[in-house]
Image 1 (tube, rainbow, N blue to C red):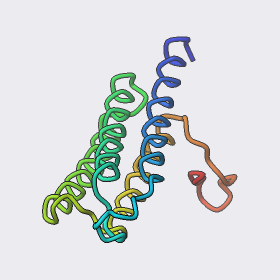
Image 2: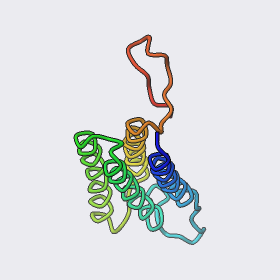
Image 3: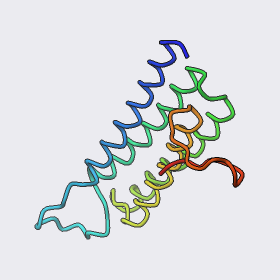
Length: 141
């Protein structure tokens, strides 16, 4: 692997990690005692963090495709899944004054994490578990 490819891979990994950290940071904030929002609904910074994570994964896909770390077909599949998650988040938030019920929020995060894991595995920056004896290796996480 050339130095340029290693740098691109490291940059891609840094972007993906930064997106996850930003989301985890935003998700970790607690609401104030006087906040009138139902605690089962997520609003404001958490919704914005989810949308930013979608954008981060999208950018990771674009960067991986430009670096020829994934094929156009893989990029298209990952991008379609990422776009669907983003549209779902925006639709739910728009339909309820910027709120996303906690269960849907966590489901969208899980789906986005699955896409992110697929991207990392396809670019060679993910960790695989298993020895392939049962038919394959599986992403760690």
